[in-house]
Length: 311
Image (cartoon, rainbow, N blue to C red):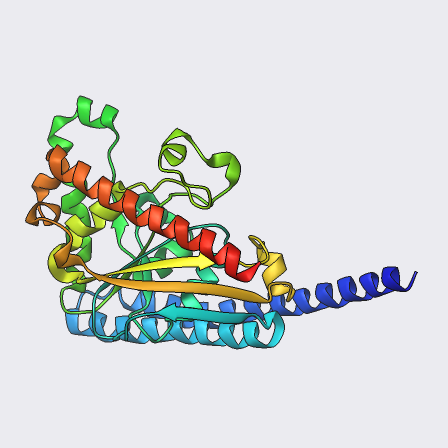
């Protein structure tokens, strides 16, 4: 009876904790969304120096939003973040960040770990998302790159579109030439679940991750060229199992392990990876896929090792 009462009390307290935390997330988002939206509207004025100054201001607003979220997490989630890394990051460098993907909590983890340590994390978005009310303008104001991808069917009907997707993305990334940026990519393409382990994952002996999809990463490397000098390989591990967003905000996630490895991109790939020829070069494609498969096998081994250490 006593244990039942304790369970009810702990559940009630966790619910109250979560509701307060979610409310603060909402208030904080609205508070910072307003200046970001105003800045994005003002940024429509086509004066480069004006746009550059506003970009810095908008990015700082987004960083403040994450900082306040971090305070919220410290008070209500009370999660211990154990960060393992081998590199001192800089705010004036260009990074490509890749990570395994298990939960929506992953995004909150990455934002908190890298906030104000590297340039604000940007995600490549599909071009049609720019038309999402309010958010599309905010993403544009934050310089999130919008990419246009064409299907095999579209290219078959319109051969002149070949290479246009890369040209469009390259043009969108021109603004990063003098402004450091961090591009984030979840290589698996979707959140991990054991039921999603397909034949490719099984052939690679993966048990804790899905097989990597290299197209998105290769596309970023082609679009950004040699500006991106460091590959930041992040492995996120949840000792008590993959949590939901509610688990996190209600204080049920006691510990998260984040393993960070940095790799010099220039030591990994041939010049083809930075050129338009990459997508027509099967040798480079196969070599890049092989490298990413190896990287993900190592990531899987880390997660297996963490199981032994933390469970």
